[in-house]
Length: 288
Image 1 (cartoon, rainbow, N blue to C red):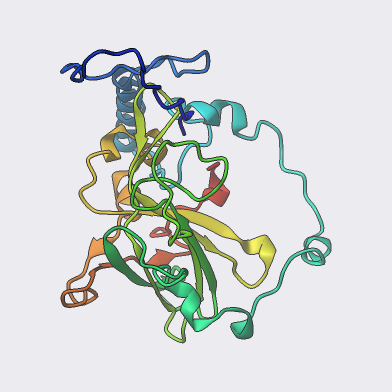
Image 2 (tube, rainbow, N blue to C red):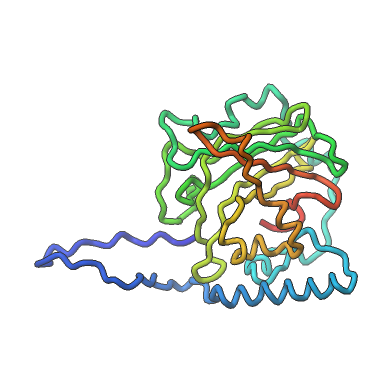
């Protein structure tokens, strides 16, 4: 995220209009501005992948989950666990955890485009898929929550300081229960990319956060879904922290013309696999 700068003040003493300078504006760097360049981060990512490719060629096991201390992802160095996990009694934890059922989730909560009195701004999309186990069996009655930025790349959260407009008709939050065949569906607006402070001029690819709760709160898993063809994939250290290309590809939804709706919206399909070698990356194994 970036800090929101104050709007420029007009000069009441100006005698004539001055056209804007033709050169790109260079933002002022504050004391917390990231010093690394995109080229430096790209070089670090390339070195990480080269090491992985060499190890894989020598017979090493594939790394389908992200590294928790992936250096190009700057905050992971400070935030990743450095000590052994503290084991707790799961039954004690569950006493303080919410429980969910069919009666708790309304049928319209999966439609993020009808949460206000007006229409949200942006490209309407439908995301449809299934939640599966490692053997391809459907996972029924699974609570799925999603949250995302709006079409301008801004979250409704008050701590988001990206100077992009807030859409009063879009919260970016929805939830649904999987059906008998593990199926789910969300109607929403395609999110925009947004800047963050990992390094200078860093941008995150457009994505939607997914949370799956399992049978109880202690089984909660969080992941991210991306859109095909995003030019920011190669530049994003969070996406690139998964060093196996096939595992990264599993985070990308596929356009599905059958999911699209005539003269109304485009459709994407994305299945979530919870276990096995084809498992979808989840943030419970990582960091953010």
